[in-house]
Picture (spheres, rainbow, N blue to C red):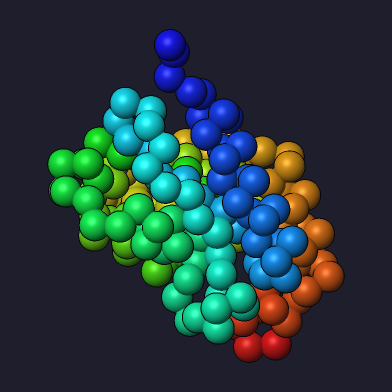
Length: 153
């Protein structure tokens, strides 16, 4: 059996983003993939749903994965529908995740430069579906989006 492509893995994260949107939250999803292609966990932004200050897509995914040995993180890929913010970038760096696949970075450009500086392989897919999901959300929910990224209206 062949390993799933980055686009196949992004589909998992995008489904999570859509789930978050359907729950009334912010449509950002993530998936943590082991070196052998096994899906370790998925997650989506749950700040609205849980009244959380930190439950972004990537941090929710990491929480859903539970405690893992450093060796698992060291071979993993974090797949996310949107460029990771500074908080999520920090979590990726803290756990030594060496590879990040980003659906799109047009609506938000996060900590990509820091990830690259720290040796993380970054793949940006410029996925039209991810872009449409975020563009539609930001246009219809500007206050909620600004809250999520820590910007005053």
